[in-house]
Image (cartoon, rainbow, N blue to C red; front, side):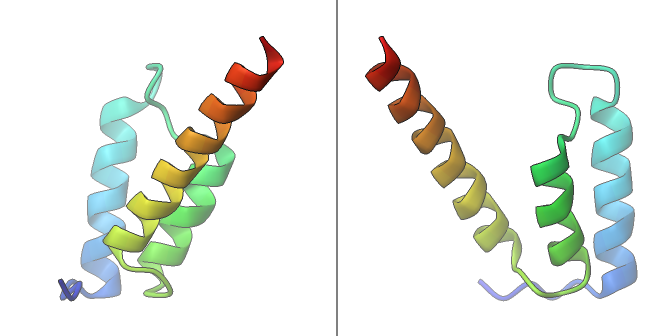
Length: 68
């Protein structure tokens, strides 16, 4: 699905989501902020951001299982 939002709309959506999660365990981390910035600039689609976050979660789970 094509991301039809313009940069200003993407930045408003990001600001809303980060404000909503600020101070919680869901607060944006540095690697997530970098992906969101690429999304805001139109360099990544939302699906690409989600795929990269999902890949990172699987990588962390794999590292955790190997270390035990």
